[in-house]
Length: 69
Image 1: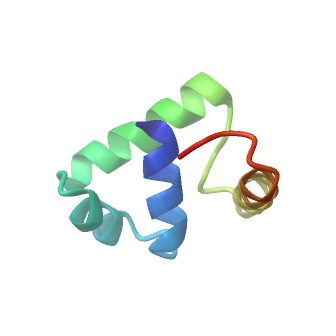
Image 2: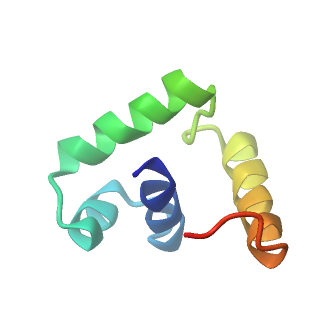
């Protein structure tokens, strides 16, 4: 799922290689997912400001139990 990919990507300090290893998928799969996230949601995870905004939003949502992971 895209949410799991984003969370692991954050947990792995934005490392595509480490994210792929953690999720047991190919490096190109993570590249594809990040590309899909950008096209579907308009979030460019290569942009530091957008990445920080998403990170903070996810953490706030987690504390408010807005969704289950």
